[in-house]
Amino acid sequence: MDKNFEQLVHQYERDKAIHDCENVIGRLFYYTATFMTDEIMPLWAERSDCTLEFPFGCYDGIDGVRRFYTQIMGDRSEPMTYERIRGVMNISTLDTEVIEVAEDRKTARGMWFSPGIETYGKSARFEEFVGRGFWAWYKVYADFILEEGEWRLWHLQYRLVFRTDYHQSWTETGDYKGYILKDPACDRKPSVKTTRYDINAMMDPGPDAPVPYHSFDEVAPGYGYVI
Image (cartoon, rainbow, N blue to C red):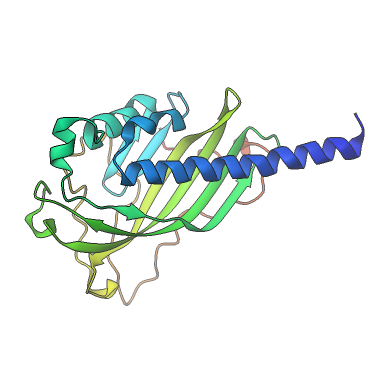
């Protein structure tokens, strides 16, 4: 194969991988916001070393990931879930994107800031969240892996920057309460403790933004991957 043509194919595959990973994370955020969780699992790799980490705790392996989405969150098509999520409106966006695809084109890494809004109905675990509007900003880190020719989620980590009432400054945010809708039944505690704004402290920068890399062996264990 002509070397120049080979380089073009390599660059095309890496560019396409970025586009595919953008679609995967975008679909995840849409399905999460709309409680269409039956659509989420095909976005994940079927691997025992998958991890899903939130500020309130972690889920390990594809079985743990599936348990969160299907049992803790639930799909809106299920009558019991539908009743529980009445009044819930949680929408998060994705910006300041950084995605790097490995030179070997087997894995990719991404980082985003994620501004969003949260509102909870009468089934919120904490009374002070019922019927209230909140700003909620996160940092999101993801590892993707190519599985059966499809780019899928492998490790996913959410870090809360702040959650505060819509009419309050983020400097007035209260202590982090955890998952709002029900007992999250996590596999383990989060790797990082969520702290509120402190005028005397620097914001936690979180993991480094992805940088060019050849293979995942160079960057393991990955975002949120601590099994």
